[in-house]
Length: 400
Image (tube, rainbow, N blue to C red; front, side):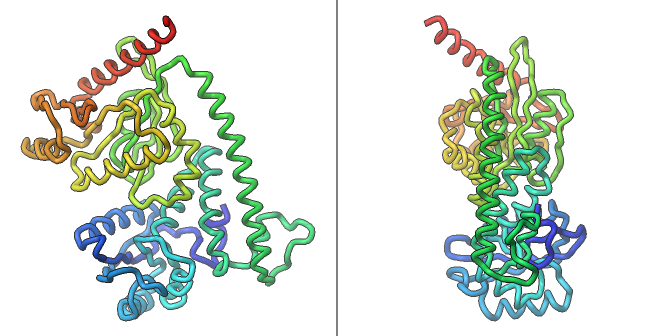
């Protein structure tokens, strides 16, 4: 994809081990503790893209500065550091406007990334299938379009030197826009064709119950997929280790069903990615049962639950039956009270502590460790029960 082939904008290929700084604001809407938490996640994103974080900059402001996101004094402090330490990237935790990115690049003399672009770059690195690569490329071009005023002039190379294209050095912005808009149109057509093929494949397996794994990124979905399907699925302690929907046939106690691992969700997910990945997320929407995987050891697991629920609402999948699967209890297993605190924090009722299962908000909830294999038998029992319910409802409809 062109974002990883050019070197005259912030849309460039990473070089493993390059240094970076992180920048974020504390505002009335986002207190200091929350900003620190977001920066921890941003650092994890940067590490996933193989950058080395050397310093974090935080400033208190009522709202982002219109010209450069941070105030003048903080900008001078950051510029002095990036130039003295020869920093390669400055990463901002919120999405930057085109003018902010342009101004920052001039002053800081390094590549400028915001959270959205960093996530796009990680998705580009992770994409394996034709569908995922097309979705990511489309999202990248959509991100680029409003930022063309600070882009380079050789975008025409994407069309292979067709007759009438600009020569080197020409800078007609409208030509740039037409090139990108043409590319977006073609990618949308290509994605629509791929999506139709996926729909046809899904229709071919309609008789089997469909179970989809959903959850925040890096909560252990792929590890659980490995465990349940007994297959070799990529599971890595990196954000967005999986962005391609992976489907496996699983048989539990004589019940065959299709298990799908889907892309993880994240706070401040770029809207273009949500839009472009809707076809992949159809695997979730068309599921008969969701396994909502939650990192029980994370301090902000409730906010992560909210992010997932909001995304499910956006794609029209919020009314689907589900099992809440609280993973990574091995991390807090030594302190029994921690499990109780987790449960109390989500307003659980009817606890059966000795079996690590309960009912929360009308949904079955199981507390497990996918890496240690703890209480997986309880999860299998819950899945079988839900599958039997789905199969029973299908039988009733057919009989009727």
